Length: 462
Ligand code: SAH
Ligand code: SF4
Ligand code: F3S
Image (cartoon, rainbow, N blue to C red; front, side, top):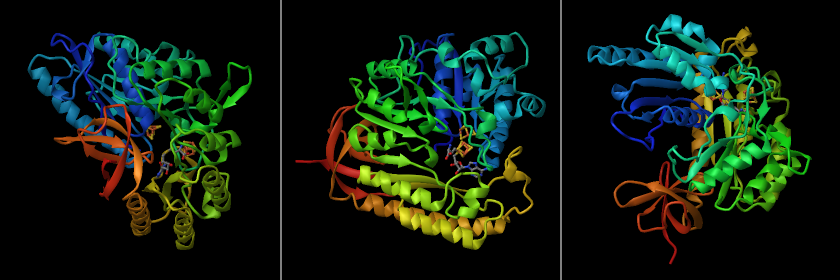
């Protein structure tokens, strides 16, 4: 999960007369994807992207509601935005301020009440209506668009990769599934993103083809429950994510495929077979488990046991022995005891993660977890989290370390520091190479000679 990524790519048409939009993105990769689609639709309205809020005629925050801290960040940022808006008004410049994303969906009109600088609130299911909402805001209205649209927003959003829309490099996200019906008792996503919807096969394949045509070499399929994706294939049969991956693997230009985030309950045989049979499907799987105690898993409504998860990991590793596992963990869910927490540590030791994200439980309004009377104290959460994180960090280091001396394929993505280029290993690690190595969008074999904190350093194989 990335946070605080600011969309930086400028629109193709960078004339100084053009109006400017500043987009700041919080939360998950789907928000990154959504920010790009919104920026694309604004590009067609004559808005160029800027990385300077002071320059922006339209400031758009694409927000995250997953934990309290994430939501609070938005309000503190809005304080800064208010100051910029006032400063610009002093220069005779109008600024429209918009809030999109999961805080927008969860809080709606309340945001207008709490923050007078906000002109427009728009939820994830209505992004195709952003240009219209912006026009009405420019006419002096305060807008809230948080209904679930009846039309398919993907039919109405501009197509990535089409003319007039800036290309964004050799890797791209592609949302194939949105929303969630699982209702884990800690999670707001089913409330902010709505119920599970899968995009049709033809729409996904067409978007992937356009992206490949625009120079994209690595596609990451996105969904809150990406492996619950299903749709009718051209053969008239019901396809799951496995079949879809086989289809996308055929596209000329696509050298690498990934998908995220998966739920353990939806790892079908087809999907495991895709890991076994598809070289372009990267041997890396983000498969959150959250906790290692069956009692806690049950109260989280995860609907599997720790043993189920371990058996699943074993099956996946049998199909694809070099697969690296990634996960998410929550410590201090209501009712979690020290003994439960020890079971989480045991599970982590059993699996061995190449990467993981771990969080203190944050009670979210409207979720069953927040209502419980057996909340775990902040002190205990603060005690458990660093112990888990130390173990996970050690595993991550060990995983990187065992790559030293080995040859790995690296997709060269972008320039790095002076004289360097940055690519990624099959296991999502940034890899630093000399600028003479490969061209952007090429996969080159390099020898890893050092594992740093976050990155690998590598040189060409002779
Ligand atoms: N769909 C994914 C998770 C999406 S949210 C899945 O089912 O695994 C990303 C991660 O945020 C979750 O995996 C969980 O670890 C964490 N998270 C979600 N709600 C949380 C909460 N209320 N407090 C702390 N962490 C939370
Ligand atoms: Fe949230 Fe659970 Fe759905 Fe993941 S599966 S988005 S954690 S409710
Ligand atoms: Fe956050 Fe919404 Fe993504 S709550 S994690 S931005 S789905």
